[in-house]
Length: 284
Image 1 (cartoon, rainbow, N blue to C red):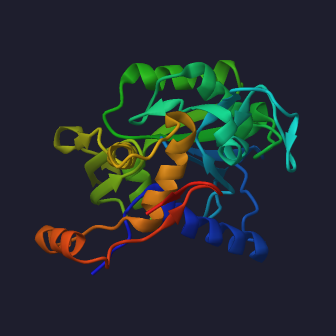
Image 2 (cartoon, one colour; image 1 turned 180 degrees about the vertical axis):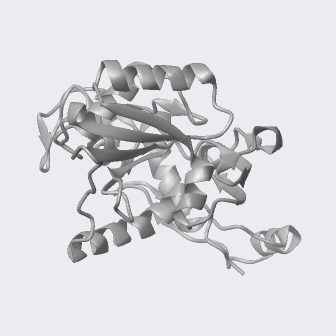
């Protein structure tokens, strides 16, 4: 009866396991182009960044697409993590309760270019890929029907700021089929920021048949926060957004029979589960 809620995090957790398996097998060594340059692949999702090298079956790094700044500087270090004026990705997610957290992308479109550049610095720098970008080419992804200005700005930053020797931006749906060895098909993709249905024929997306909906996992997280607020739970919108997202991915599911689900919720306790969001707060 219960089906796990389809969200980025559910797929991400399984993907991370496969990444570790591939690393252990030693099959993730990057391939070079004809001139000996690495080809970087970077999927800038609204919720997560997935990055690695062409020739690998899985991304080398997967981390939250968020940037945080300390609300109050009360200590210099928490555990093994140093608190800096700017924290990105995994570090920002770990210390999100102490940070004002921002998401550079919304609905698959870059809304904050300064924070997006911080995210790319983190991606290409020593924290993750640790590459010399001028000696690499890069393949980036985007949802279908994104504004042309967004694509132009991304290419401008990749060439002028990071000085990649080559840049290409591909539609996510087309790459999804390529990964399965297919050139023709219909892709339904619902991520954290965008849902789209995209027909692809012989490797080309068909824009006149593509349908895009700017409602996805992040909107469901916001709605869950709204429901919890109505129940009397208090949340820091910035810091607790990630916490509620994790709660959604662990406990929520798709019900095929809405009447039966409502009856179970109102008349039984079979759907009641507890989730500890901190040492002092418990949600049930």
